[in-house]
Image (spheres, one colour):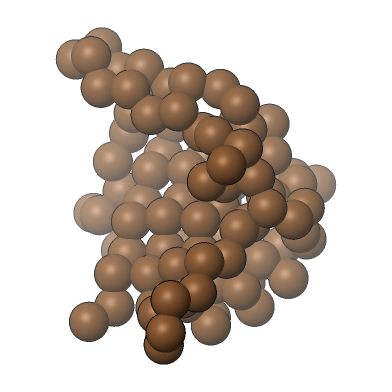
Length: 100
């Protein structure tokens, strides 16, 4: 079972959920085209949550920033986002959803 790291940011009525596959925390993902994404403790390093708890956090979000194959698959299978919106950075799935 995959561990998810989930951090929730609240500003007024806006709720951003930043989440990653636990094994990516602290790593820098690099694409062949030079794009880098650092999976930082400061941004993604919130609580360790189960899949069910992570889904509950995503349901309450107005925006999502997700990195990792497992977390992105969980989001898609829970009805968040569309597979065509997923980008790969260094072979790792990344999905950003902003509800307006």
